[in-house]
Amino acid sequence: MLLVIDPVFFDLSQSALLDLGQAVFALAYVLVHLYFPTAFILQGILLGAFAASKFWSTTLFFIAAVATYRIMHKKWHTGMFFGHIIIGFITFCLIYLHAFIAHAPFNIIFYQLKTLKYWFNHSVSSVPGDAILLFLTGQHHIWWQNNELIRVIGWPPMWPISASALILSAIILRKKRGHYFFLVCSRCCIYALLPFRRPTCGILCLFFPIAI
Image (cartoon, rainbow, N blue to C red; front, top):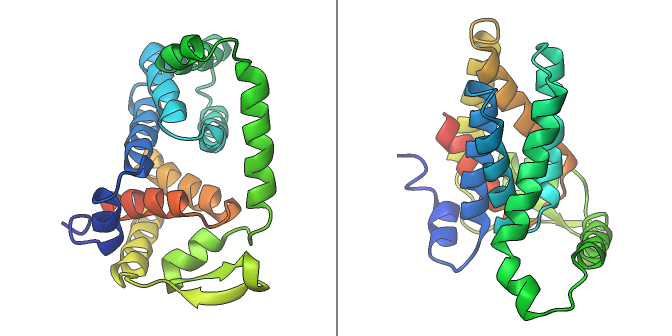
């Protein structure tokens, strides 16, 4: 219910954006890893869809978070983990197969590295962790005006309330529900590292309210 009345979610759902689709694949990818740890084929398919739904750089943070969780909980299986990454890469290529053929010759590796360089240069110009600041206060820095703070129109007060309740419940249930605690902490760490962008805002508005 909180997600349905969220103004940012409503705005994103009315626009031709890929943020919500990527958020759905991201959530499904994490949940399958937590509750179906041996289903590496499904994990790979979701990873490929996650990467192909928008720019693939966000998937790197999720892969790192999942790998950390598996190592800490002694659930690491080298063959399955790298197998799901290979399946994810194949899925990614199959999704864009038509584009590769239609625009041949097409150097996918060069193109993706060039896009990654642009993303990195564009992201470091912002303040890391701005997504958390936006989520809790409704403000973020604008890098094109000496990092001044501005307030986002339509910021819902339920964001910090739901986030506080979610984190508190994760702390209380950390021993009984390890998956739940990891799900909350990993997302907080990921968004603490990421700069503010509208796609980040889109994923945030789906993840935190839906988890509460």
